[in-house]
Amino acid sequence: MHRRLLAPSALAACLLLAIPASAATATSQEGAPGAPGLGDPYYPDYGNGGYDVSHYDLRLKYQPTTDRLDGTATLLATTSQALSRFNLDFALDVSEVRVDGRKAAFTRSGAHELEVTPAAPLAKDQRISVVVRYSGTPSQVKVDGFTSWLRTPDGGVGANEPESAWWWFPSNDHPLDKATYDISVAVPDGTQAISNGVLASQSSRLGWTRYNWRSNKPQATYLATLAVGKFDITTGTTADGLPVLNAYSKDLGDNAGAARASIERTPEVAEWLTEVFGPYPFNALGGYVPNTKTGYALETQTRPFYSPAQFAKGANVSVVVHELAHQWYGDSVSVKGWKDIWVNEGFARYAQWLWSEKEGEGTGQELADHVYAQYPADDPFWKVRPGDPGPENQFHLAVYDRGALTLQVLRNEIGDKDFFAILKGWPQQNAYGNASVADFVRYAEKVSGKPLADLFETWLYTAAKPAAPAAARHGLGEEPTPAEPRSWKKISATDTVHDHGHGAGSHR
Image 1 (cartoon, rainbow, N blue to C red):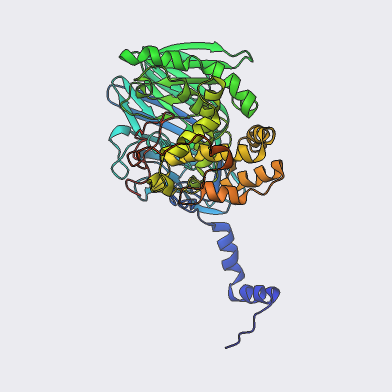
Image 2: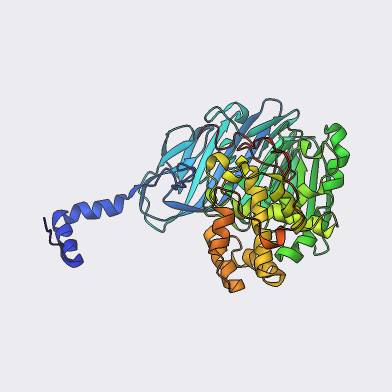
């Protein structure tokens, strides 16, 4: 049957006739609910639609002995549509919500969705403030049987990927919605609170000490961190005047010396990375090591989190290189979607190879040859596609090592001049924004003037061992016995497999 299509203008007229003018006006004024997720293919319910947050102001009080957290979060945002209601990602108990000063209705929807209905609908492009009062015991609140809040003998820590904010502040929890932060935390005297950015002020009153931290550049929610405990703290400045603050739990035991010997080299490593990646993008440097039982490190913005296990075998400057490289690749330039994780991890791993090259401990080519030879063609390592590994393999070793191998192949193909121009130009072109693997491929083609789609298809998207590239064919020798199968677990900046929280694959 042939159907005659109406012209757009005629169709519009029909629609206007079908909907009374009063109803159309009411719909426009009342708005519609914001989406309860941003539709990320890996985590569809992460983030929320209908608004964009520009700033988080968190005023918190935390009691380490009981793990009790009380907070008031003020979010400054702009609506991207007319809204009748909107969601926040949050898992603790909420006592009150206000939107533009007026009390708003709220309810739970699922384990981490807070539905907020303002007293009056919000217009598109309206600047709004949202105040949420809340409390809870973060380590006891489970989402799918899991918490990202890590208890320590003297406090607690919020640090995980791909989510950690739900357990200590309400947010639009996806890297696409970055914001600046003021984080103010009151803790008992004698205890410290460590967070992102610069310590703007510190004051004591009635047995409590309040620490006020400021992170003044756009920051993804999972990169916000909070650690409360008793720390040995070192401070200083870089040659360029950036403040440096490192914190080490007082009860690290035998790992304390190795941790400090590694992290105190942060200014040196950052100075070298500016030669590779361009100007450092943030207002502070540092790192912290709480006494957790986790095995991973995380690139929390300006102040990476390191577990004590990273230093159990001695000094580990390589992990510092990895997490600081993320300040450019992952923090300043963040993923558009979680499938783009190679843009974070492949580059941070390759920074480790470049550091090894600088230190005379193996060139990028030698390390690439080693990785290539280490896994026979039938090893599961080659089944993972770093360019889109799937949520179950988001932190698989292949994303790191095959991801770095891809960059060495690119370097061989286009030469050092264009390769290092790309490494430096990419984070400057995309500073404080988001980008995908496809965006990087286009950029590399533009800078090099070469077609590179086939190279990336082979090394990032083919679930098989590629033929060795010309520069990697020499000295491979016989392939070793297959390594133990890798899991989805988050990989540290060393070659060992470490649990990175619950990971995506355990329940999603």
